[in-house]
Image (cartoon, rainbow over all chains, first blue to last red; front, side):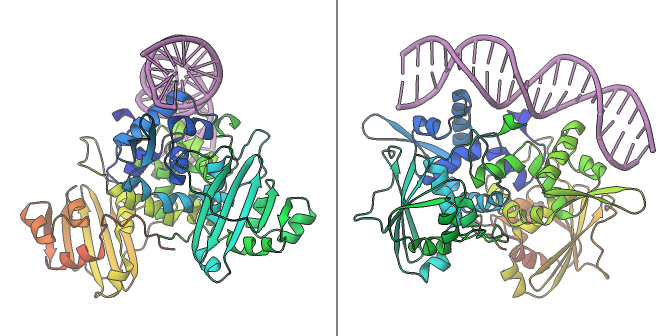
Length: 234
Length: 234
DNA sequence: CCGGATCCGAATCGATACTG
DNA sequence: CAGTATCGATTCGGATCCGG
């Protein structure tokens, strides 16, 4: 394992040695949504070989980033340590940065519940949200469905489908104010290249129920602009 | 190269595909100090195989993170694009995060001019600095020597030794107010585990010239505390 | 010296199968 | 559910070589 060392005494190097291996940051991305079982991670990262998943989880535990915890009577989840949670603003900022270079999805690219949850978190603008009324959305992308509630500067996301993990967030009471389905083109709404109205016209977004005008509020609340990658909230 | 794709349509995934390969982030770290020639990078990353350095530079160019630029009449430097520079606050935050898990250096670990420059940038606290008088330090670690000037909330670092790169920062005029040499234990001063006075007593820091009391100001200006990884300045 | 390209053994990764 | 085991495919590391 010393063979993977970069041979430099430096904080950046240390960080890369801790979380720079292939797949590690994506495992952490999913754990930032909540504690996950081994199998949850495997489902959320369909292309990861299981031996790699095992190896990464072991390394991340040794690095103090991830911890195993019991779930119910028998059962087991992986969760971030406090040190691991400190990575969250960094990963969110990285997501904003990467967002700008996203093109069209490849033919085999998928969107998972956890990746979409984190994508919404990267795009969330607390400042904008706090000056807007509370809102309650239901978002569908592919077969992923999320319940997204914004209140003041707080964002709460619960996974409706596919089958929510046992430790997922609790569903808000009541009905969403708007339900909409989107394809990859939702990216253009987040980036501001399309207004919600244009996105509906272009067939990128379909309103399934509720008030279409609420999409304006959604677009104001979730937005990543060109310079957006620099800001990193604590 | 599509084989390296993670198969997910997500900003974080895109970011990791752009800069997540082995050595990539360390190349970027050095480029954040300034434009560098191929050979500068090779010297600053002694353990990188040259074919990997070539491959990474090519990939980073394709990703729009790095660009080649002419230097003088004949000659060539690699430099960050604007998009690549947007990574800087993220890399600095990552350095703060990794700093906390740094232990003692391994027997073959080295400190380079660029890694030390970036380490000081990660530890720099503009808020603290702006309420302190300006200061002019000369820092030696191993055979690396840096001239470090703090004025208000601005930090300027020039590399004195080893031989400054052709495009390095300009040396400030005048004499440094204090010259000191440090070993790896300087980390304990940055983390606050040792006061400068204790560090001098412990032989971790040697004052070669000037006022030893200025090290107090240095320790106030350059500091990473346990919760420090969260804050990310633009 | 600069800026790589080439070659090859070692280590890692990916895909699949299998197990307590 | 939570992983190991195996094995071919890739990538990495180390060294050498080469054209300007």
